[in-house]
Image (cartoon, rainbow over all chains, first blue to last red; front, side):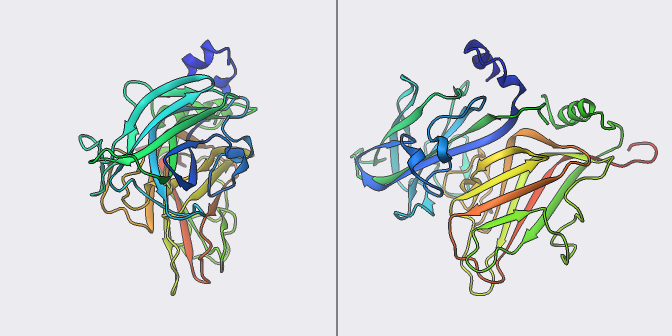
Length: 176
Length: 182
């Protein structure tokens, strides 16, 4: 995280509060193709937890994405949700004008080799090798399409996505 | 920071707090009733009238020779008589140490129940809709004599009069030691 921040000239990021963070957004109107996080400043909790800044972090805040998960909202109010339940999601993660994860798929149960959530099939992707840094003040979004994991037929669905990882929070003093 | 031990020593030394003391694993907790339809609760704020099982603190700061790392977050909910509230709906947890937000708009509900969405690669099948634990990626220190509190917002407004929510924070810590540390 600090390597990339330094490369981007974000010299003060190293002085910010280290934290663990998850940001999520959801589209509760079913569709074949969905864009998540874009326009999230217009949505309130529980539809998203991004708040007024929407899909860009404020000054000196950043998120090193280490895990991406997709879920299906139960209803239009976005209060509750399930895992993917037999569906997979093809997605792109875009930061600024750059696609940083391209045509990837979170397969339902696709992490069986090293992921155990009771008996539920996984609906997450743990990023391999390194995480991906979302820097401050740069818009990010996810393009997603749901489809049946077995028949490989696209389907219209409600969809939510979370990005989980190590974060920096704005801090005017020393980290504690 | 390599681990909880070095992070705690680093922060305590930075703040001029004593770094000697008995090393321990610390667990602090507080239970709150959100009230009928309540969706916002604050932990580690009011301690009056609570039993030893509802909280193990009497004030919202650690003693002058005590400090700890927040590494695990535990949340348990008792839906109450005829209540239906669980932890599976979206949650919004903030933790403040001093005047600083150290955990911001965090949604621990992804670790509730078993939906294939847990943050952990190995997530116990025991995990239920009323009890969850999140292991943080980072080590966050509560220094000695600094106020702390946590706020939790619930997406669902189905709390009843005796619904109870407990928040526990666990991690490496230091407690007062008059002599040799064991």
